[in-house]
Image (tube, rainbow, N blue to C red; front, side, top):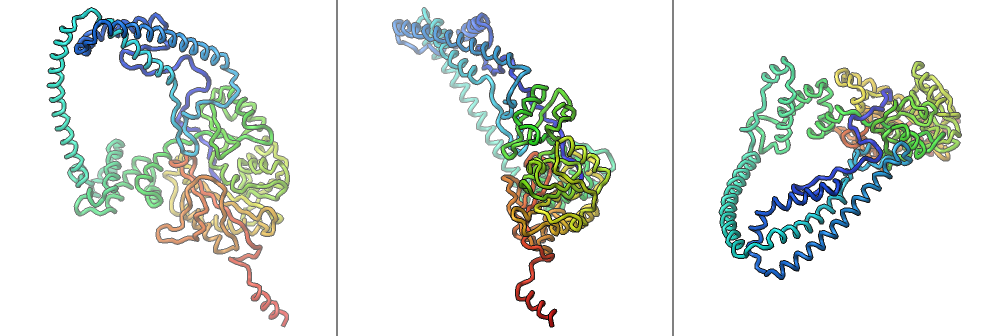
Length: 599
């Protein structure tokens, strides 16, 4: 597609490399096992003296005799000694691991270990690793042993009768307080139940839908974002249980109208685009999509396997202060960059062609096409060269790769990237894609990343929010239908290894995706096949009264709020015959026509 799709994400990650110590959450009165031994002893003494009164009350009913207390005290002393040994061992372990970690700073030779605490590009956030968990477990065990020893020392020498009297007095007071608290809790729970019931029955007393006149008056003044966002949430709450929560006399269309106007003002879109998104998604998901467009996608790079390996590239960039991780399991060449101490687009590795700055979503059509060595492949809309160089890498610089683009100005960047990445099997052409079939020889595979409205990369180009119109979508769809027929016609159906076309866009409109694919299925003898991608949302087979070919479920959609990458569409065709038409002419009809021509 025309827009580029590589943007850095605003969610920073922790710098790769070891850190001194670990953050351990301590309970009240607990001893920090990472502190010096002297401070730990002082903290233990303070905790023991502070619990004296509580120990007197809790041990008032203990009448085991002084012999039992003596035995218990001896056991507690043994526990304390073993606890001290464990503390010394843990402190030594911490010191050793700390020295080792700092010895490795500046020469890390593996990919950052912090990936489990960082979001995945596929949209699956992994749970953060909890540092200091062993320390917390040791603290808990040591606290228990110290508490037992302290309790026995404090109660030693105190008269059992006095402790019993104090214990009985405290128990009576505690029972009275517990009864009062239970009564308050029951009252509070009854009140909350009544509140939940009121909200479930209606909610019309809490939220009133504004009239159209009130909405018009609001638009004359600057938007109050907090008020609008609150109203959006209230409307969504009503739409979830519309029959119970809607105001009498108000239709669902009234709530959708208010929701569309509020979302357009909050996120800065023209009304047409918000209405389009509300048609594509349920209301709550549409809000998630709009919010995802307010956040830029992660910065991703693709390893150039013609010159290096991903592991070696990661080691080199980490040594330069780049914090990165592998993208996800679905890609063997992608890396996600969280932050960097140097410009990622100006490192010696970049200038040497070891990697390409490329959005994760643009990997997908190339992976779906899966070109083989010694094939003839064409990229019909090749500039600026991210997909073309990926195709050359998969072909291992064998065969023949035609890189075409209709814009002569954009060819300069394409040629520069081909040279930098070490591509030697490419031929650069400057033709209108609709005329390419009559210029090139029969091809084994074609990639058509068609020009589109760019509604999947709004985070990268915010101007789309206010500039797109329905005519833009219609114009792009008409051009895409012409391009896809030309691409199919340029493929050789008799290819032993290929006969494949991949159609992709960086937009989410049905008119530019499913409608174009359905048009090609009706006009040419092709069929859809599996894309080979393990994730993605199946394409629409029905949309607002339109029924598409049932095989469209094999195509895949990708969304920023679901997969944490640019919005994208990928469909894979296989050409069944070289006849230009929806299906080849039957043998009987062909024989009859030939006989008529001879007569």
